[in-house]
Length: 288
Image 1: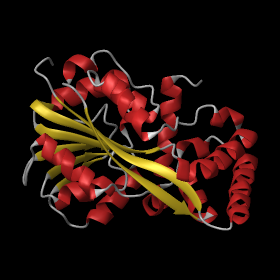
Image 2: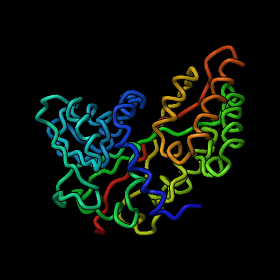
Image 3: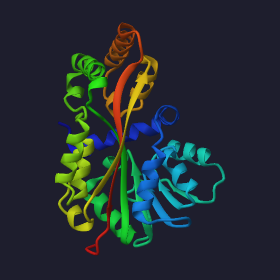
């Protein structure tokens, strides 16, 4: 297993793939974002911070709700695309910096959002810095897509993972765990006293820290499951935007893409994958 700091450096590859990332990564269900905003009690004009905005998939949803967004992103190409995607909106300020180093005011934001990015931030810094920048009672909302284990896609997903295990067993060994929906919720409920433990469970991330339990109140989980049907080309385009793909050799990448094409041809239909969009939210306590 890679050391945590070493593993986090793979997050830098997203900036090198900014355009493909923008084309291939899905947006987030509007009902989830609306629910997170409702839980946070934020309305038009509220100041919020986004940690790791990427090319602005979530940012657009926040701006559309009239929120005043400070969007922090370390990748200069990602920020450039986000600025382009948001146009001339006066509701968002971009900060091209690592979240750990970003000069943002303390006890200022009503909510902090992070979509598919929080695990790339040093967990010895992230939980405490978020708590410091939030007003008392402010909300942290973490958002991500995760794989889901269910009957209607199990055979297809097993074929994909088997191909990965044959070609790159070292990567397959670190692939995020797929769980059934009930098991996902049950595990989150058992850990809800510490949001970092919930997030570690949900996304198979090494981010759990004891101090997060005193900084944030009981975590709330909301989710929207979906069944994806993708051609091999669509699946491979998405795969190329993942950090794990960047750790494959050229030969492994070519072999894996051929395998996915063969699976698609063998099935004679799109490849099915079950996924779930998850929001984990918790409110800042007074212990900062």
